[in-house]
Amino acid sequence: MLTVCLAAGATTLLDQSVLNIAVPALRQSLSATAMDVQWIVSGYSLAFGLALVPGGSLGDVRGRKHLFLVGLATFVVCGVIAATGTRPGTVVAARLVQGAGAGLVNSQVIGTLQDVFRGLDRARALGLYAVTGGVAAALGPALGGALVALCGPGTGWRLCLLLSAPCGVVTLWLAARRLPPPRRVAAPGRPDVWGLVCVAALTLSLMLPFMRTPGSGRAVTLWGAAAFAAAGALVLGQWWRIRRERVPLLHPALVRSAPYALGTVVAMAQFGSSMAASLVLTLFLQSGLGLSALTTAAVTLPSAVAMGVSSAVAWRVVRRIGAHTVTAGLALGILALLGGALAATHLPLAVLPVALAVVQLGAGVAGGLAVSPNQARVLQHAPAEAAGVAGGILQMAQRIAAAVCLSAVSGIYLRGSTGAEGAEGAAPRSAFAVASVVCAGLLGVGLVLSAVLRREPSAVRHPSPAVVPDPSTTPPANRRTTRRPRDPAG
Image 1: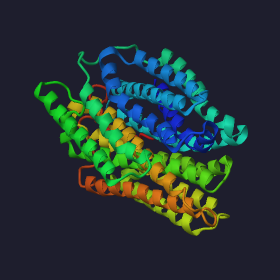
Image 2 (image 1 turned 90 degrees about the horizontal axis):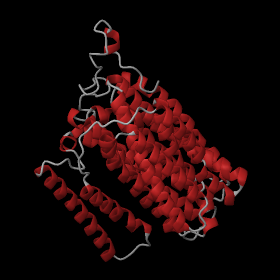
Image 3 (image 1 turned 90 degrees about the vertical axis):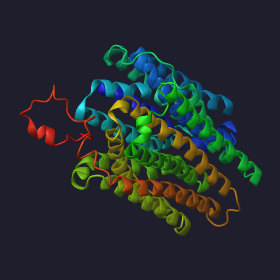
Image 4 (image 1 turned 60 degrees about the vertical axis):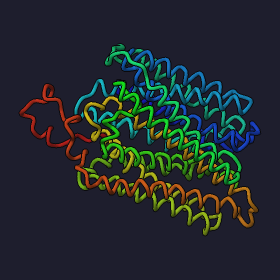
């Protein structure tokens, strides 16, 4: 069952990152505009995030297995439609529905792990889920680059979208055999549709300005007013549902838990920054510098390798320095992004790919130190009465952050790289540096909040009652097991 859950998480996260390296080929093949590209890459994350919470609620009420199978089948079919599309609009629509299917699948994965595992076993399972998804996302550009290099740009980007199909089919077969039978874990209730609409409106209000050419101050003011109105409507809707004794989209216990709220913002900053930085790097190497897809894959591969290795040892680091591990990972990520910006603006083209590969090595180590320990810290700080929805809200927040960051940072790069190029692509180099600094700024926000969280009791070293071993399944004499948390990364 754990293998099925990890396979589903890896397949859906690989599907987004593997396309990043094929974006220039896709854009040329379909004659897509910059806005089409932004919708293709960020629309998936937007639909993914918005489907998580209602998917989790439906799973609580109707059982998880059938929804898992429906979501994964939708994901596979829409992947095939996107891969065979001949117009940008077809690919955008297919990616939106595919993202919703991925969100439905992952909400059942989170719920299943919460239902089946208890105590430190739950922390281990959620840690493996985070690490598997992170490594899959880091490995995607290397796989995509190999496909584009071997099969050519015109066919390569389609194969990148088809890569998830065989993985999804195998996971479907395993899920039908291994997932627990569907059962209800909650009483029927109406999902907070109003809250979801407000979150979608708020996200679009933040995304759309970056998908257009720079407008007047009046247009910026209108988008800001729309975002403010959506945020106000969300707050009022949550208040109204609480007064009516209905379950709101954002559980009150989660909002009141400062460690959970701050840790979620840290996760948003890290996830959004890493996804946007990966996309901009592939655009810069291929469209900006004219390097091949295979060279681009070689530059990004060290990130996947380093993240896998650092994720495996991250929990040993946590045992030594506790919550400082996440802060150290974020600081290293900032240094890697700033190092990439300096390399792009000062080094000659002959040595730039090697320098960026070294930078990616540091970025991979940073991701491995930050992702899984921060997720464990956030979920273990979640109040017991909201433990079931905490994982869904966390993933929804990360996906919405990714949608906004992908749109904003790629828009900054695409607009900046169209100027007069000069020697060795001066405009793309400058645009990449600016985009990298923006991503470093996002990580800087996460770094400050992570430093604040260090003052809280370490949820990793001192688990809260929601994650301690179940007394009914832990022998009283086994004192070493209860004192030493097992390594969630294996």
